[in-house]
Length: 420
Image (tube, rainbow, N blue to C red; front, top):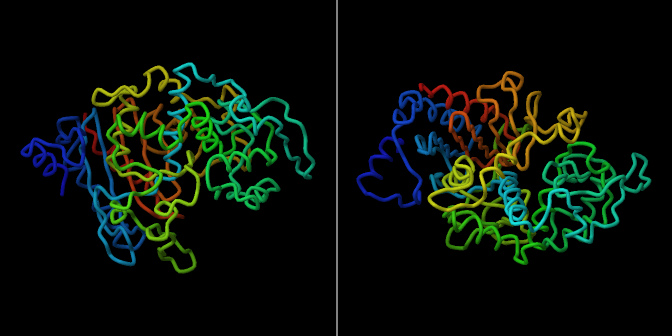
């Protein structure tokens, strides 16, 4: 169904059924071209037809109005089940902005300070050491702080993207398959750091540690805090750490591109998935399931300065602070150290508190606005928020090891539809 027909049906029905107060409009009402937006789906369809994607949901909003929502392909390559606009996706690292927001909500309430040592809330982190290249342990030069966690400069790692001594220890200890956040904190607290805290940007489990801090400070489970303070007020009814039994049929199969065969292969079936049979902790770094519409609600709240449909989640100045580049203040050079660049990071890009921040689009080499902020997930999900154009773009897929320039292509098609 095209967005024009969708908008018309919503107006005739005088309801927003699955969209829960998301406002829909014709593209021309917000300075975009319907004809140009109609270019989007054929391109995404071609990726599906050529076997590079199984299924995709794409969504665009401008000036508070949704102007594009479409879907194509299959939710499960094996069964042929069609993807729908309310299909459920593993958003993996798109969980990170939500977790960062939760910490900043506590900060606004005076319940923690960003320069507080992490050990104030997690005593397990009170005697950390740093592993040298040769394996010898050194004392930390300064204590790890909450702000360092927010900016991935705390000295932690992930254990899956590298093969250092510390990475191997993470894997051997089963850090990322901990049964709960308490066990996770115990295991990480016994691991050495990979770098001195506050000395460089290194993508890591830092945001998962923030989830544990939310638990300790709030006295609630991390999932309960998010449900009560974020998801319920924003009417995000399809965002959770574990897929409810009555929604499993909407949950996508995850796929992985196999370079040896050149094909997508099933890598995580819903019936066997940890997201259905909860076997790991509530991961603030990558544990949420969501829909395109739910993530649009979150993104629109952020773009609105912390409020959506009368629900105030966080203050506008706090969000302004979160979406600035914080790396120069720590390093003076955007933290660009050999081996420490994230996929997709480039010159002209910095990092805020939960979001990458594009400071110079000409250096980044893609269309957009300076000051936009964004992130993505390991299974190919992407979003960006452009305050200058009042624009949000979201794409949901379920593919590891994506081989196509999906984000760049979708952005070019989206910005190409702006006419005013």
